[in-house]
Image (cartoon, rainbow, N blue to C red; front, top):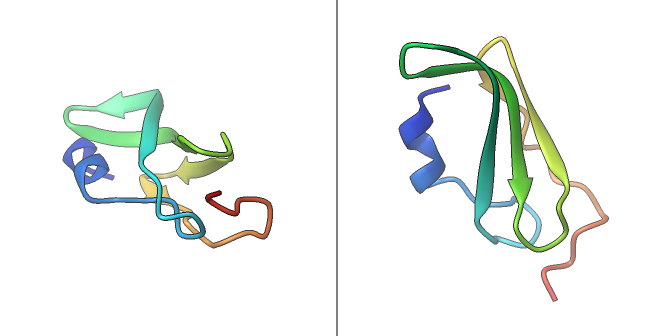
Length: 62
């Protein structure tokens, strides 16, 4: 995942901003890590450069 994508990605449930947590990087590509919701702190994993932003029921955005 290109690190710059964090500017346009939001939590799929609450539509809140996400914080990028990098575990492994190659250049400006994030290979392993997580995108963390600023409302509920749910971590959406990044594996092999692919973010998993499937919605889940635990974040309401309220």
